[in-house]
Image (cartoon, rainbow, N blue to C red; front, side, top):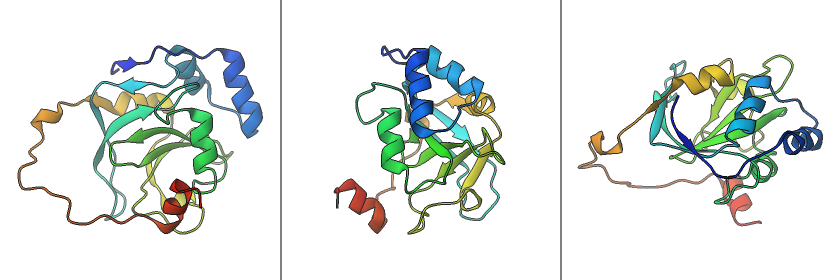
Length: 178
């Protein structure tokens, strides 16, 4: 497993309080992760995904895992409140990628514990549904196994420049508190 840096710890009562507030139960493997790491900032790392659709991503770079009492906008409850109307019902955001996408965990009965990625560039104007998202794996434990260390200096960047940027109008409104 990759190294995850975080000096802020969470206790079981904080996790239980979160579950009570969202009225959903977290899988045991994710609870264990929160108790041990409480989210945090991984060493430079990447995870790979299967491609099911022509627009699916092959891989993405990790930015942060959400936890309780974290700064830099990585607090799990704050992220849940922020994305609640954009992500599928009965799901929670669990981490972010360098590209601004969100990795989420389904807590629905049918897809309990499954991990998906919400690509903000492909997001619809309405609340997302799981079938519109890219599936990653069936458990948080397997998701952690997929994350590999990554040396950013190995990435060839010469000749690559951002030519344009599009932001979903609803996402823009949320960012600007409209």
